Length: 345
Image (cartoon, rainbow, N blue to C red):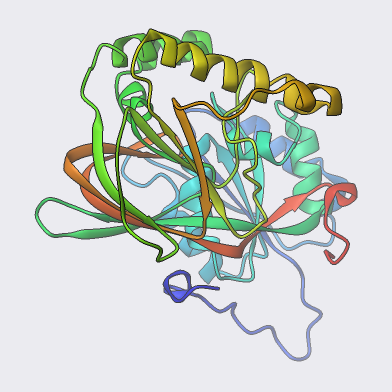
């Protein structure tokens, strides 16, 4: 575990030496996206919860999407923290659970559900998700961290589970119509992408991976991923794995309409279709100039001007410099028993 990720580590309260420890769960839910009554009924009906201590309940708010609630849950001795909400709720809770003995259970809700998708967890099945929380197994996954430097000199440290992005990615998210998103889901991002593509500004940056020599690049977009799948079966980062101790980054560098066509074919057709079979992989074309993939454990970036940054689908304002690193195995998540690693409980 990196030194950066150990900051804020919290110890579990000591159990009585004479009492049999009873496991305890906490539920942190977004009341805008989750029906609290339905969720409470699902927890009460879960047979696997028998023998556990009384479940703790925390609602998120606009001011606090889950960080403060997760801290309180850990301080009160939660063994499993169930995050019920969108990617933002899950990210906020995971950031607190990193380095503790508590496990994160997912009850995905909302548009993206990107971590759940990349873990191949069941979506839109509350009873199943609750069953995994109480009766599943633990799996260790990587957690990515970003240290963001602000224009005024301030530094913020944030975790992300899936992807971070600059350029088209961040501009698309900032321009997404939330009302449209509520009606049509992830398709709202298509309209936002159309708006973002009108912006002809490019990212100009100096970057360095794993302490190697510094390089300069001009790109339309930079995406750094702890895992690589998006909705609609889009495999953006084909070799990214959530438990390999590295992230994969891609620079999108189209110089013309032909460059965008190359990107579309590579990501949608080759990564999304051909890569999934042995025969298909033999049919794939060599790398194209419009896309450049890089893998590493640490990334440092200095931008020529302030740019918007997004983490797991949420905007984190503008930055001119940041560094990112992977905390290998830094987070424990609950998964179905059959999908856990052999060493899991």
